Length: 109
Image (tube, rainbow, N blue to C red; front, side, top):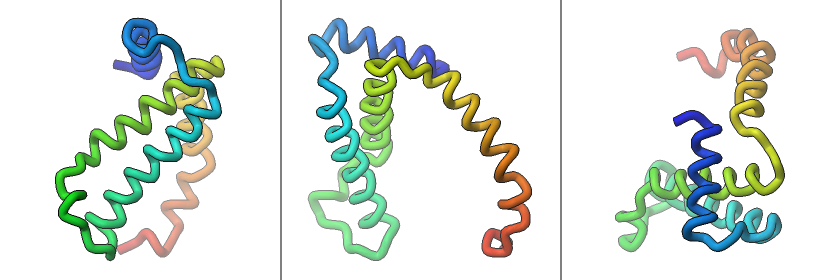
């Protein structure tokens, strides 16, 4: 599924199950909350913090999907075409960062 399909799938879900989109400020707060849940898993599972027993069953993929879902909600309700925006971003990053990353001594191992 491409990003247009993802946006349509989220919109269909909202229409059929979610009643309506939460307002943009609520969704921004939700996005922040979901990113925090991802950060908690990463810090405890891959970082130096110890992982609590209650966190060991948390699914990183599920939490990342929550981030994507809310980001797509924000895109849908603000009229952003994520397919177009992502393609543009990849082109910009490719042109801007190719040499920079290849020439970065910190990335050579």
